[in-house]
Image 1 (tube, rainbow, N blue to C red):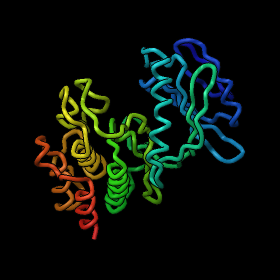
Image 2: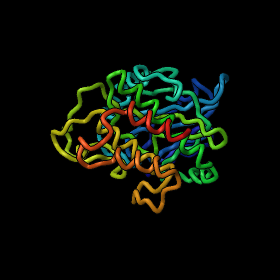
Image 3: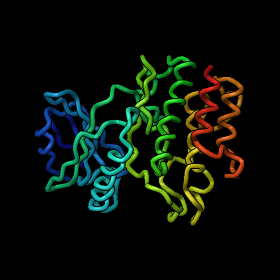
Image 4: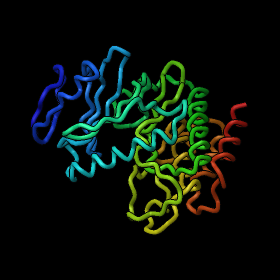
Length: 273
């Protein structure tokens, strides 16, 4: 491991890499260098406000695949953010080719990640039950639109969700591997956290579709209102109706889940009344 600096901010890498391209946007004020995806992420202060820059091409600490594959995945990800543009999705400003790699430049979000791997998550501890339930509605409503546009969520997990701790407004991010339908499991164990994965995401050849996504959405309800590791009723902070909605989403047999995200989202909205 080596450590180099960008505007005084340390970046850990397996070997040196030219990061001077970041200067085109402004001054780097933070870095996220612990991902296993092959990406480096930076907070950059520009003249037009703060930006979030995701970059592939550097020899990152935890990724040991080919850097060219990481670049190709990020290049493809640009089409995801363009196709699914939505008020609840982080806004892609531009995609930039660089001699050393490829970068996506997004608006910076003041939200806090739900991901349990981030220390900042503690800032959400004071979020009220009402705002937590409302955040779930926002996540559901976005995925209603994803399904309506003919796309399928892949690797949807708590780290994909940012929440403003004051307003409860949700911003979705890190949706790089969402795909247009139809999708089949060609991997066996697909991308993702096991806490949010349906049985078909572990089964080679299984269909991956809207009903698959309903399982992850039910698990995310437990992230906000319960315990997504155990899914136990005793950890649930929402209403009984809401628990029942989430439980129906996570049935191991596909036919026993909600038949559409639209129906699940409608049931959840009724539970907020």
